[in-house]
Image 1 (cartoon, rainbow, N blue to C red):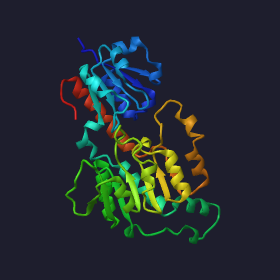
Image 2: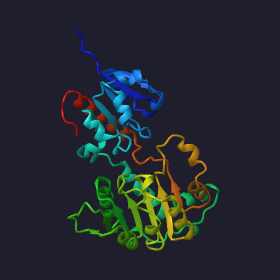
Image 3: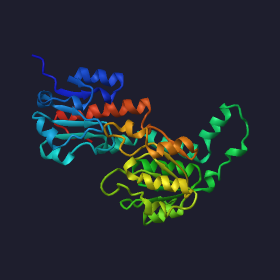
Length: 327
């Protein structure tokens, strides 16, 4: 007799790569819905595995409806959408990439995009491109303020991504500062600032690499923006909820910030986000000004990284179902 496959609930909005999607169908009795708004109690009651997309909270109420649930899976580096504590209390394992730090050392696209944004922002690449394709050829309007080698960078959060960004910064021969109350680096090339205020007042470029939680939410507020070194740049590839967006807009309009590049946005994982985004004051500012770059959360968006993280998430699920430890 063939062993029954575990029942897994997968949502189309996750958009797994073809080979990983095929593996899901091979290894699981797969139930597929467009998104969690299509859940039913009958489906939730029979699943062993739940693949959880960002933007839809797997809370106590949902977990309680999943009477056979053994694993909640998410191919994300954070789990703001999962009540991890309650899941574990109920004996449900959480297979999330946040708990796979050794594996994540191989996943570098967000750090790479950070540098792409830094270069694009400080070297005026986007407006220069627009100027050129209109048939113009004049370098003078697009001179950068300074060489990167004569600028300093401040890294907020010296975890996995912050450390990679610091390593890349050294290649550009920059002065490197960081703020992280939980990390003290032994690298003599990195200078630690005691407070976020000290960091932003010191450096030419700030780049953010911290998770979103109650401690970090709105850490870049009006008070902090007023402490920035005049003419500094801000790059955020972490989470939009780390920034007070009205304060950011004021800093850009006043010239306190020379520019910003943002791969994340406030509320981007909420339902109907795009409706609100289309009329957001920050988007309106970006349409009229060259010193604000927006990209639609493409930090981790390389096909190889997608494939690797999805496959590793499936590995973690299968390890958890077999009784092993997941990491």
